Length: 258
Image (cartoon, rainbow, N blue to C red):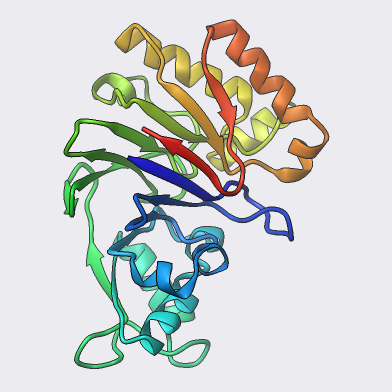
């Protein structure tokens, strides 16, 4: 699988974009920057978009994507929980803020919503996606993605500390995990359902206790202001040294072969 990091951050600027991942050009995880990062042609190639939760930085490009697809007589499948769908329809795709692109054009709507449940499996071409409940707002889901070749990765979405048993049956080749803030904000971040480098280290220790090894780790959803002053990088490097782990900070347009 080829994963392209379209957006790697939690703040948007001329140099940073909100989180979106693109898998083999056809599958997107979260919609923080889909229309910013993809051409019209690339947007039309999207077979499916999976949305982890209802927070704006993860759903923001769905209305714009829908309008772009509508103008090109194209469509895509949007997989999400009911809360995400209801938020989009009531607040954004409501015919006032933006057209009701889940209903138009009538014969073939640009956006087709599909309900997903935790621990179900969804086949999209040669990929299989399994949503997993994580610790953030109600019903936030991370996504385990595998292909027919047996390769897999897990994208945490926004996630705070997890129950110990969470990792027992999850052993991906690559872990794409959020790390939002620095260790100085650990208690605030823990309460908000996010991770710092020290909280990530606790999760990785639990993972290793179950599986005896660690996957390659890629961090996303970083605060770019903390990244630019070197704080996050130095703290993550310390975690990598402690655990003898391969930890990289993602950046926009980064590509990863899994």
